[in-house]
Image 1 (cartoon, rainbow, N blue to C red):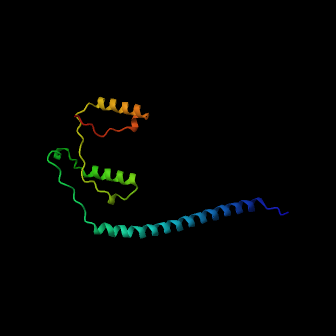
Image 2 (cartoon, rainbow, N blue to C red):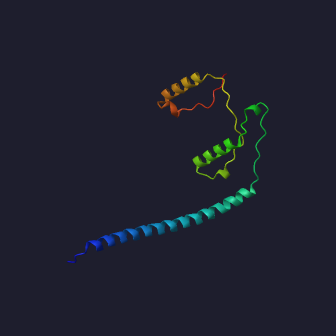
Image 3 (cartoon, rainbow, N blue to C red):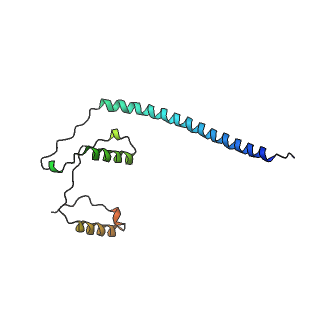
Length: 137
């Protein structure tokens, strides 16, 4: 039986690890290049379709809503980026046409009470219930 020296075994082990890592890097680079080419091929038809569709202009705000309009470009950019990140899309495909401030005349404690009652009835945590509008009749 052959006896290998300790330095030979260490050198062979280090060489094996180095070669394995090199193969992993080469495979990752190759797969990345393939994915980039596939994305470019699918993005080109989408970009040409976007160029042919004229942009839709936002409707003019009503006179009653004029005081509630938010006109802060940084805020709109931040909201657009957050929506794009959540949807996993490019932000250029998202256009926000209007942001209005919500004016509530209903007592916040009443909204909290209704939210808690609905959550209890549904058997869920109150954080899972969101009331978006309440209209008095």
